[in-house]
Structure formats: C-alpha cells, structure tokens
Length: 174
Image (cartoon, rainbow, N blue to C red; front, side, top):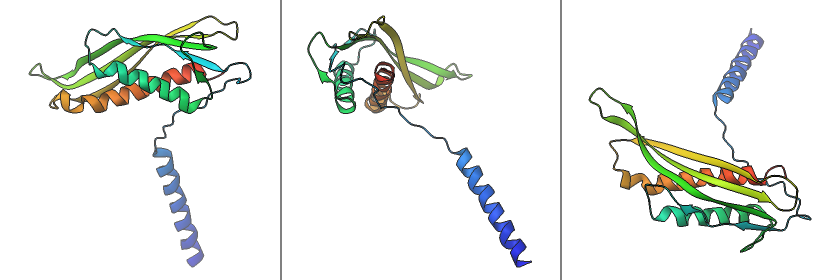
C-alpha cells in the first residue's frame, strides 16, 4: 500500500512537472553570426535616415548607434566608412500610431506604435544579388496612457527588435 502511494505521488508530480514545462513560453534571439572571417573582414553600415512622416528626433540617432553596437559586439567584422566586404544601408520609413480596439463610444482602448525600416544588404565577397527587406516591429499600449510617458521605453524595444531582425537576416548562413 505504501509503495502504491509513493508510485502514485511520483506519477502525479511528473505529470504536473511536464504540464508546467509544456505551458511555458520560450523566447530566444538568434545572435550567432555564421561568417567566413577568412573571406569577409569588413562591414559598412550606412546611416539610416528617418524618412517617416511622424518624426521623433532621438529615433534616428538611437537606431544608428544600436546597429553599430550590435554588429561590433556580435561579429569580428571591422566597421569601415566605405567599400566594406559587406554593406548594410537603408532608411526608417515609418513611425506611426494606430488606434486599436475601438469601443462603442468610438474611442480606441489601445494604440499601436509601429516602426518600419527598409534595409538593403550586399555581400561584395560572394556573387549573390543584393537583398532588400522591409522590417517592422510594433508595441501596443493603453490609450489611457500618455504617450510621452511610454515613448522612450517603446522606442528602445522597437529598435532592439528591428536591429535583431536585421542582424539575423544579414549575418546568418554566410
């Protein structure tokens, strides 16, 4: 009888542990560059100009600094001012607020902030066509929140996400 209870308790604990583990959401960021450093030694990152109709002055500078920081921290490529073995350039094309979840009184209960960047990538060391992609990230916040109080935090999150996507798109599988 004691053996049966012990076995039953172990089974319940294992099932509980498995269900808890399977309900967890795992999130990760791929930041491992697969670059042939014997062939590719330099990287040119062009200045991404903010061409969005809605302008937030710190956005352009923060984005460009984060781009350079990401590539210098996660690769052994030397940043150059022109003619890199690899080249990344583009522009910030959208920074916009969109009302969401419109209620009966015609007011939105949530607002979405979206940032979109158009990016062009060339690898001058191998014969492949230039790649152009549009990358977006967004965050939703309560419309009851004063935008100025959350804007800096949201911008940092959006920049991190877009830069991660650019890094993964350009540095993986080379």
